[in-house]
Image (cartoon, rainbow, N blue to C red; front, top):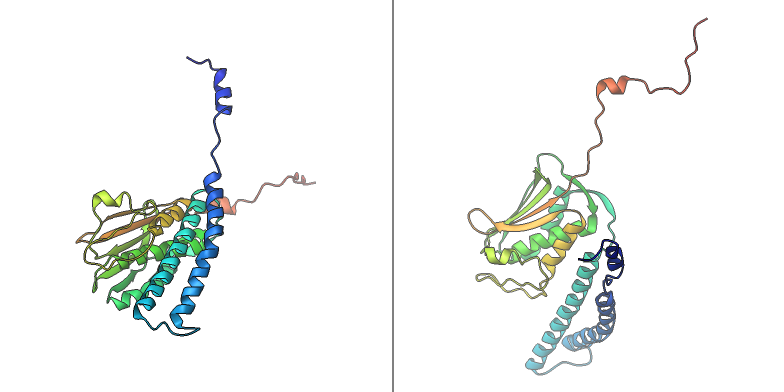
Length: 271
């Protein structure tokens, strides 16, 4: 059994975390962006026929496929870089008061076009009183929009998505409830991991690297909250986001407020 005196030395000798993955990702991002941007630019010129039309229809289809594949790969690199920076604490938070009702409204507006194309009804259930949290406006907007977009993507045509904001016993609560095909219990524990892609039957497949919900989980953790998926009553999926409410200022009682503050000077005695 090692002596206690040896333990500090062992602790000092523990290997440090290797920063190579972060440096490697940054270099890969730089090296990959240049050829990808060239592929995107040239394929777009070819698709619109800047220097002459592509007479063969098959070539036209190939050019569209090349452009779409390059765009997806670039989005994957960007998303992976943001996710790693977020998990490592490399993205700072610009804290400001955020009204979650207004943020939920903006998230619904952002996906309203896609929902309308598939006749999906969007509804917002406002809180009885304002629910305000402290957080980064852009990141919270991205978080809520991704949760709502995910619900729309996995809801069949003619379904509905409801966003509910209220105060729960553990803090501010946002619930995104859809009438989709649902997510199995065995899958729900893994949907917030990177590169997990759900392809349920009955809804159109969506291209993407599977980083959206992983970024949602990272943003939530950076704000001291948590997020989870569960089966919604009557079918579908319910995503629940919990964010901490700002600490309320101490309430002074009426008697303490009326009591004058003690003075450091002595009161003069009457003559």
